[in-house]
Image (cartoon, rainbow, N blue to C red; front, side, top):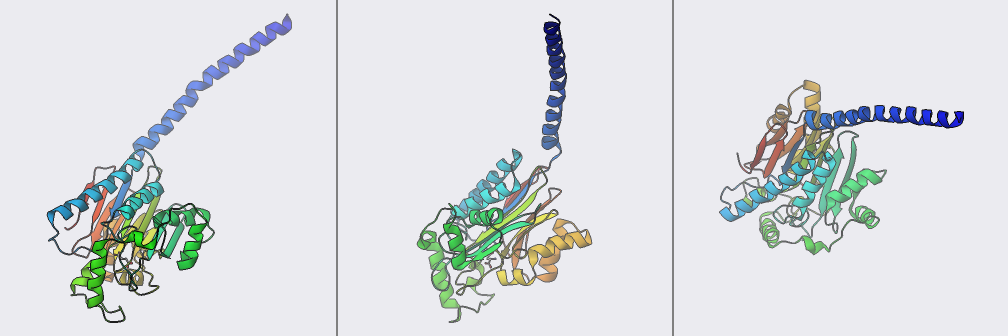
Length: 347
Ligand code: ASP
């Protein structure tokens, strides 16, 4: 009897402890959820290359670019608004742009001097300084996904050419034939570039028409609600590039960079972007001078680069978005939690 009374007593005590603790736990979970929703900024910026000078694009083509940029922006916004990771937003936006034949990355990549497609990509996680990069890919449909694989699963950062393809063999990333990247438009551009270049394929006259259509690259930078920054860039490189040429895109700190202050992706003349270690310089300028993201990018565009060289899209840890170039135009878009939203090509 005494035993039964004791058991009943213990059951009542236990029940009241559980009942008492439940609301506390619920409140804590609710508070945490609120903190994530309320407090946090998110921001996204993206580009589809600075390879556009002429405003005389046919209306229909212009509209196709705007629609594609809008769609890319929506993909990133959806992920970030619902609390997704900056890295996922960057990867998914870049995949969309890689698969879109309008842009010089993935499908629609430019031709090399030898008439092939060689793709470069990089991704970087600002919170860990983790990075993955590839150059000279010939059969990977979405280089950005392989770059993320390198970042997350390899003890190295940067793979090139045959080694990069071999690394891809060990993953499940989708493979295609090299001519899958072919588009008629890029083929015509390549033919024109071949006529204009010197026989070595090296000399580019900045005044020539070909100069303007050599560019094109896609990239994205994002800040998620947890405060993490990430950047990614993917490209076919420059039209008629020489055998083995590596551009700025996969070079961490040149065309792609992210830390806990800012995430940046570049487009434009890769050699110039590399010389100035551009993306890293922007982040360092912010850090060392306390300048804003906008001012830091302007420092690089005005003080370091020449007119016509490049464009940058970036976000910082406060959710500021910057889309700036010293070229005539840059396919670009960006938005943030504070209500900024822009999709643009020229000024
Ligand atoms: N920066 C790229 C490269 O030089 C090209 C581009 O952005 O258009 O490979």
